[in-house]
Length: 527
Image (cartoon, rainbow, N blue to C red; front, top):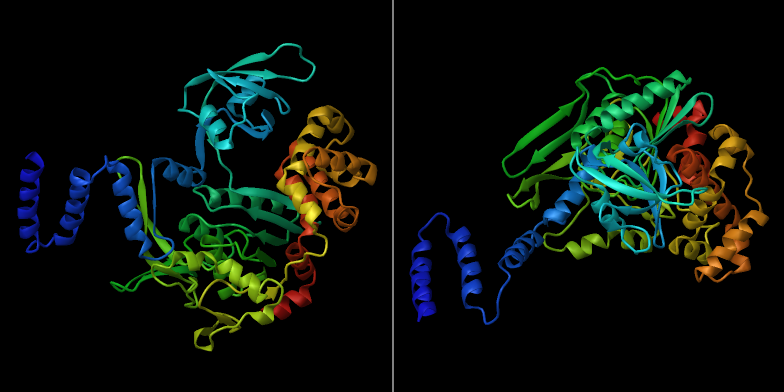
């Protein structure tokens, strides 16, 4: 009887809401209540509402999304510039947590935790001996600033575990993976994401390299999925003149257009710049590369970028969940639309774009890329022809090179063999390596990975179920040796050491270095 009365009341409400301005909103709320109160089985209201929101957003563009509380935290933390934790870089191998590096000045370094230590427990949680995903481990190690946690570690040469009391603190999340001098006059900076502090990090990296004699710069944006618009504008401002437009946003619904100009005095407005991009360079990466291309300030090298030019605005809910809703579009300074085409409500087709590019031969030949002539425009200073309609087409196309890659190598990587070998090798030889090679320069020039050394890698692969194939090994031998050497350097020194060793495997890097080293070629591209 109670349900009948409730249903009657609800029907009266429905009858009246069609005259209300909030008709559609109330209709949606009414639908949720009808399902919650009358469905044959018990309903999880929270899940019902979440699925309803997702279903609505699915009818829109592919980048308007809903995230629950946990997903929202995972999305925003890497962009906020810091989090609170104990301050280590770690690697889980099988069921053992290895400390790869302690963060300089962080809580672990202050109490004496060392690279190579194995964390056994943290608080009441057992870390080693239990297979855990990285997200689970981070959930245990992170916590509010000022809270304490006792960790026990096993250290090589010590019989008993050592217990450290750690006071958690703010830990910086860096967005620049690598900074080094390629040669006496050419610097290299790799940006992995555009976070809150990326602009400051980038300026610091520029100053550091200029002190070392940098005249020209290779800027690596490969696989950079983007981030904050403001950070991309800050980085672009280091290269451009005051007042130059970096990017514009346009809302076609209400006609609101906003320009983002350079408002500071950049410190690298002279000197050659080559930007490395690929098909996974997206959003803020495309803003930066598009701005430098349109202002004829640098040469773009690589493959056509992803094509994400939709601007999302976050709308947080009180429970920590969030909607990221598309509110406008990005345009380069010459007026090119960065966003690639899509059909409303057909996100699955949109997400298969990379497969379509591969099947069409786009990754191996620039001739397979066809542009709409109606979207042709010109750069702002040299009047070079560029095209809109999706992504940034590089000035110099570089195809994917698969000549040294094999199924055997792929399986070694997929099983984590190379990484496991490097972590174990460094754990056993860290002190000897540091004693023999005083710095990265000495390691790069002196450490040799020969076939005898690689035999241990092959054996570990067999233990992990990777069948040895001699023909594939010969084909990929140099790649395997280089990556292993790079991973060892990363664990002994830093990520810059890894890229310094591994970059010569990347044909985009090699082409960038070739162009920036030849002034005539560089100038010819920009003319």
